[in-house]
Image 1: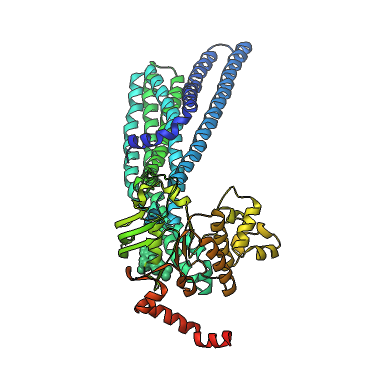
Image 2: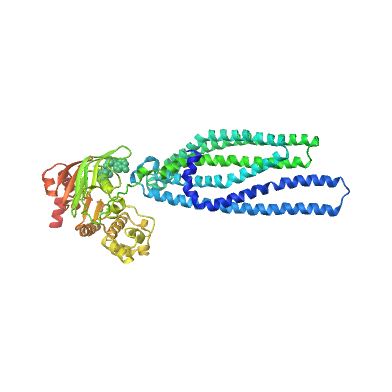
Length: 593
Ligand SMILES: Nc1ncnc2c1ncn2[C@@H]1O[C@H](COP(=O)(O)OP(=O)(O)OP(=O)(O)O)[C@@H](O)[C@H]1O
């Protein structure tokens, strides 16, 4: 990424703060002019004191001269302080407000991306978090550097140089000669650091991701007593980052040393040339002080310029990844224009192949129909592709080949939000947010009343247990058992009350009695809705209006429970195996007597 592109990309975020920027630039000019007052006053002081020394001391004149010099210096310092404060307030305002704007924009973009974006290796949660964090931080720093910091420095250096040239062209040329040397060293420094920086960024992202992974899996780590194994894995990343940071800093120290030498050479040259002119009586003694102080006004900003350039090149490195992330239109849900006021809810997959981003083909030429108002079941062994088919029907992924249709039109032609609003999902792993039970259930319909939340919990056979909790619905939802969390997800679905239900193992991790209660509630809600159910529980499969049998990503059977059983094959094997696992004959003897 180059500077022009970066400014173009940042401009929409900077534009809102144009007023503050203009004010900052105005203060900059005033600040740069004020910075030249001290050297001029010093020159005047030395020359005046020299003049006074040549005459008998007149106390009144001394007090008048010293008093007015002190007054000028104090007033200048006071004004400079006010200008600096103004610049700092403005720069903070621009920086933090812009960071908030960038953050808002990033969240709205990322949240709208297709699931396939998050399935990419480089977009694992920890890595994304680091990229967002570092990206926003370095970009806002850049804006501050570009628009707020650089300007005062350049202005200060420019005014100081103009003054030096005005006093004496020879001294001016000497002072200017140091600048290209300085710029060359800074450029070399940055070029050498570029690759190290990229590596550091990559290792930082990996480290953040690894830490995230460790904390997320701490229960498994502890149960397998893998603390030291995990510690070693973290250590490797940590050491690698550490080494790179040390190398980065060491290189910086060398270059900083070189620049310091260049600066000192500059001071000595200015000093020698000025002394030459003073001895030739072409300048007053005060000029020595004036030139050295003015040269300091030139070199000090240039010294900082490197820090800014350094931060700027770091920002360019992060900006690339950051803008790639937030401008990735290929992952945006294509919001189709179809917004029917009513639909029959006839979903289907037509000759669908589906390959995950990592290259794993989960579905081969799958054709299936979810008949409106009917219950369709998907059966198959673990890994057969059932959840993948559901993900395609929910529009979370796009098929690699073939089409997903709703009422005969490609699903992609519909307004995706409208589709998702009308589809209810209960997945194998239901996410429970940090928050209370009430908040988690209300997620199904944000405007629901407390009574409606309680009614949904009742339908999901959860209300009774919540009542027993000391804090009731205000209990932290993540503190509940797996089965209770599953019922929160089901209560959410009841609250949402959508016409299409996609259920992936809705009663997994529930005890038999609760599973039966939920099944009854689901049976009630299933009436006149389009339902797809995936389950290893045969009681939930047998009642389906139609059943599809999936094997290694292919449909190998279709029909009702009876017809599929009669035709044998995988379905029959699954049912027989279920019956044996349940020890049906003994169960029947015990239950039926
Ligand atoms: N996010 C993913 N990335 C890559 N491959 C995946 C992903 N999710 C699933 N797969 C693979 O796709 C295949 C089908 O998986 P899927 O989850 O659809 O099976 P399933 O029939 O639902 O299994 P189960 O009954 O165990 O839930 C499997 O081989 C699985 O490893």
